[in-house]
Length: 355
Length: 269
Image (cartoon, rainbow over all chains, first blue to last red; front, side, top):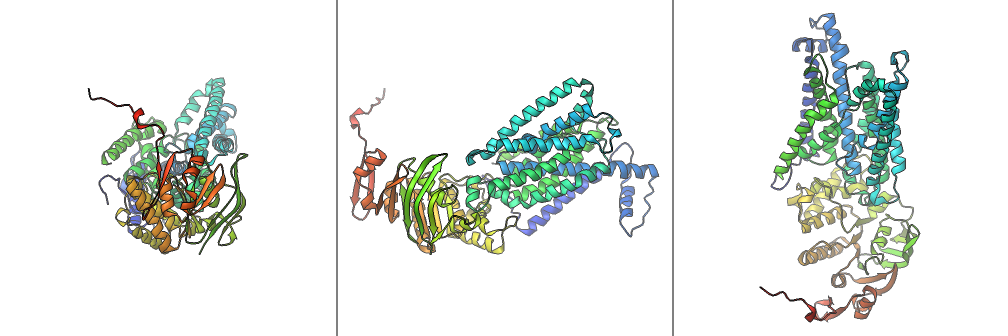
């Protein structure tokens, strides 16, 4: 399938290739998840974990031999954390891929359009002015981060709508950069005024999955499912958008509407993800681009694969974050960049050699 | 059979009139070329027909006004290729040509067996089967022009709007692409409206020429009537000689007005 002078391209429309790819992605996600569940301060045996999992299947009754404490570690700490890492990673990657498609810009991702800065401001305000979060019936931090992220992108969208179609995509990106700068400045100011919260804000910004449980999973699951499924529906139209707004319109697409729908879906999902995980950087850029460089540029391929590989990537990054300096944890945002960047550069240089 | 008729079409960009009250009629299965200097309004007129820019006046296809048609319906009737089509990096030729099927595919759907059959047929007709899995940006100029035409043909529309289809090609490929468009027109009963800079090619291939200047039609008819030295000089501010070679058609040759002796000679020291 490879020819001289071309990068490899997989034709996903043939079902055989599609099924094989789906199998590979599912396998990678399962292996990462299993590793994430098995590795930790308390050693759980592979067989015992499998037995525990099988025991939960209706109609199956096996004894895993795990103590009550070990079972609690598995069910209340490891599994929700792995599930959440998977949801957040998949969401960040597919949202990044969709943004790159709809803006025809390799650096676009929801963070750039105000999600990161908005969520950062929201989180900082919550930490600074609503301390002792346990007193509140609903934790204000994720709510504030979510609201900040959605607000950031909405302001960008309203201000960045351009009259000239030719620059519509570029104008939105520029507006996003300006809005992000403004929100970040505000966030920094609030943080300086409340310097006692510095450590907490900083930890949130670098991203962490250390305090999560099933509550966070149920909090973001509906958003991730709706947003992910919505974006997958646009996989063909994202390929069409690649020819530019005017040509897309000339084959019957309403490009402005498609962009708004994709931005809305990706923003809601990403806002939910960052609300519980903090600002985990780089996933939305490196996962889709690695797929592009290795497997091909059609969004019918990139979107579903980003979901899977993004999930696996973040599960493994979280595994590294909590085991390298155990019992201390490295912020997961540090891990994604520290291991992600060299990996990405490797893929980039290999791809260049092939062409 | 679709004929195309523009009546009193006016287009303004932010208050400035770019096209003012233009009438153009393109009979079914014929080829009409819009000619005229840069900024005359050729591209704007094509974009109006494609529904990409608002206009006043009437544009009718087979007697039915296009205003009020959905974008999807209009793109089943009219295919438009801009002067410099965007070739999305990394997309295969097949995927790129499939974009032309968009008017027939539901919003969130994908290609049916019929769509794939049309794409395959178009690729074969334009001799692109061998390049079907190549990435679009790796094609040569001539090949990518054929791929772009294939995308337009995949729309299965009877009207083809082409903005400068030969501007990026060498003289040989220019001729090949123009011949190909003409063959397709005859074979598939297409109605073709092109904007063209090359007056010789326009005269050789189009049955009628429409000369635009400052957004208005200043001359219209067969090449022999429209392409006169005096008229080209007036509207293009160009010095040309129009040669009517028997058997070769009309040839418009630019002539340098300065005398050749002005040339700086470089000695070989």
